[in-house]
Image (cartoon, rainbow, N blue to C red; front, side, top):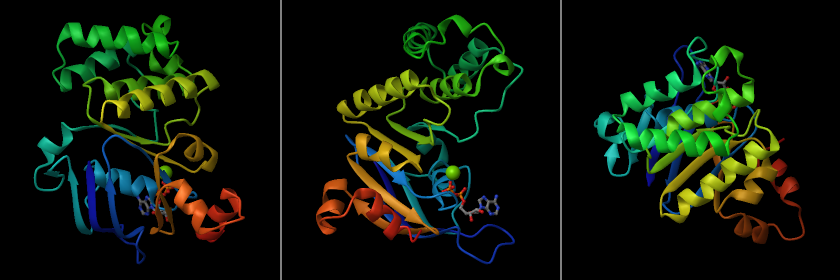
Length: 240
Ligand SMILES: Nc1ncnc2c1ncn2[C@@H]1O[C@H](COP(=O)(O)OP(=O)(O)O)[C@@H](O)[C@H]1O
Ligand SMILES: [Mg+2]
């Protein structure tokens, strides 16, 4: 579970709030979508949840640990996949995964089982010996997701994870998300694609211009706006 209380962010040198007073509980056992147009504040929020950025105001608790005052304990609870998979380009796929597994002290047998199973599901098993610079964007995205999940974190935080993935990759990642929440654990992912949220999410939070516009289920959102398509509702509440 992740709890956000009055979370705001003003970037250095900026006079506006990139994220403005977010109050949100991300529940266990659910896939939660963080939906909003480009520049809405999704990445900024996910970086605050995972301790990459410090909030200007407010508090974030991950499975009972405050990310600011108890960062190490909080960081053991989640796996974070950032929106830019273009790092570590000189290392081979397998080296990257072992590097991540070393950081999180994943026992050898456990990591080998995870790598074999997940790389095969993602169709990149045969490419693990190649350098990431030789990977396509989608293959890099897959290996980064694997690196984020190699320590079996209970909370998944994925920033636009479907971008660049082929249809089978998208299908596989969706299946993995569903399997994860079926075990009572949590998945939070951001997307600007409403269709994806519509198909996959138990709960959504819609953000635009840094402000939380709606938090709840898609069904409730639809009920509150009878006769309108979700797309129209979405465009209305995000002000576009
Ligand atoms: N490093 C930064 N410095 C200053 N402003 C930033 C920085 N990163 C993002 N922003 C601004 O914060 C706002 C939210 O951006 P972001 O969180 O990346 O949105 P999203 O992920 O929803 O597309 C935007 O107005 C963006 O220009
Ligand atoms: Mg973003």
